[in-house]
Structure formats: structure tokens, C-alpha cells
Length: 360
Image: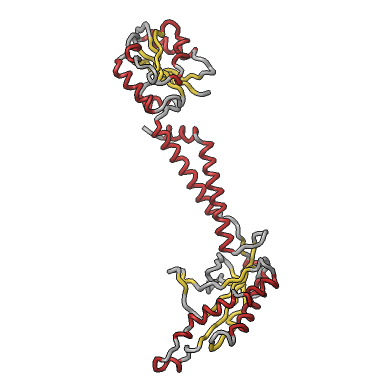
């Protein structure tokens, strides 16, 4: 079964690719955070810090006056929403935004956000026109916002059928999370009045919270995928895997570089204890290296077989008193291991145990 020990072994075995995947997710999170942070903060400077100032106009259309509504003569063609939309379009037109960008530089951003109800995430109908200007310094942001408001009043007068258009509020710096589609909140912390410029700096940095989330998701996903891979492929990667997957005790853990002297001594001791004269050395496939173990056992190893390649493996191992199974790290597939166990059961020869061969 899959337990905490095998989980730790799987993580240790795949540690490098797990960390690579986590770093990739971390980079993706940083990129997403930067892109989203850049758009929400309207950052256009190489330093990453911008300031957004917001001015407000109040628009009143013909048809709103109480005497116009008497008797059902309200002029819907001159409704408040049409008037506000027309004025907003003027703010971002070439006559207003275009001229100011030409004057102050192309990195100046001018937008007309809506007043958003955060409970429903929908625009709130009102007669205010919000003018947001983002610049690399607070003075410029406020100056351009005020000039945009004045230019809009001049252009709208006589062009848009309005009863009145007035400057409701001079430009103030916005604080907190700034969106180009949502106006500043009303209330504490929404705008900074006076000359307190430093409090309104909007840094389009990378969100640490998103980095943690992306890194965590990448780490968990990588661990789950690699652990699932180890379980589904059913390859043996350690001595404990042999006991867990095959229910066969491990005689010795050896390596091709270190030799099999200790393995030979362990098998000889088991043979002597059980009164055995011969042993068959078997591997699930040729990759397991059963021949190397048979070589150090000498004459006591009467036969060497590979279950995956030898069709007569069952008859061969029946010539010996017992079988020593040899499995190397990741050498045989789950299907080959399953075939080897079936062959051992068919032969009915006692299994001394398994020699696990590591890669190192």
C-alpha cells in the first residue's frame, strides 16, 4: 500500500522535477500578478510607480427639470445616461485626451471609469463624470486631470444638449487598488486631499499572495502527479517498494558498483539455515541483472532466468531447491513484475527473498 514512507521516497526521488515545476508556477504567478497589477494600477513608467488623480464633473441634461416632467413630457432622447455617455466620450476624444497627451507625453493615461457597486459589481447610475489621469508624478496627474475637466466643460457646452455641466470636485489623488474601469470609492481612504502626494503612490508590483498561491499549487500538483505516477507504473524504486508491491522479503540491497559479496554471503546463510543445496537466480527482465548475482554465487546457482524473455523459465527454476529474485531500481515495468510473480506461483518453488539493486 501507499503510505507516508513511500510518499517521502517518491518526493525525494522526483525532488528536482518537483522543484522545477514549482518554480515554473511561481514564474507564471509573478507574470500574471505583474500583468494584472500593471493594468489595475495603470503603470506606464519604467520605475513601476504611478499616481492616479481623479476629477469629477456634474452633468445635468435638459428634461431633468421638474417642470419638464409634468404631464409626461419627459424627453427620453435627452436622458441623463445619454448626456453622461456623451460627456465621457468627449473626455477621451482627440480634442481633450489627445491634446493633453500631446502636451504632457504619451505615457499619460486618461480614462473615464464608472462608479461601481462592489456588492453587485455593476455600475451605479449617476450624473457624475469621473476623469482619471495616471502619470509618473502626482503633480502632473492632478494638473492634467483638472485641465481635462476644464477642456471637457468647454467642449461639451453648446455641443451636448445639457442644462448644465460643472466641476464637482478638483483632482485628488486616489489610493488603494486602482482600476481603470472603476472610479474611486467614496469615504475614508478613497482619495487624498491636499498635498499629501506620497500616500497615493500606486506601485504596480508583484503580489506576494499570488506568488504563494501559485507556488503552493505548483508544488502540490507536482507531488500528486509524481506520486500517482509511481503508484500507477508499479515499478520498484526501493527495497520497501519490493516488500510493498510484491510481498517478498528483501535479502540484501546491493549496487553494481559496490559488488555483490554481501549478497552472496546473505544467500549462503539462508541456504544453510534451510538445508538447501541449490538456488535459481531470477529477474523480472534482463535489465534486473540476475546474471551478476548468479556469478558471485558460483556453482550453487544452478540456473539463471529472466521471466520476461525466457518462455521456459518455470521449468528451469523448478530444477533448484529455491529461488532468489533479483530486481533493479526502475528496471522492470509493472506488467513484467506481475508476470514474474505469476511464474513464481506456477513453479511453486520456495522464494528465499529478493535482492534489490540500486543505481548507485
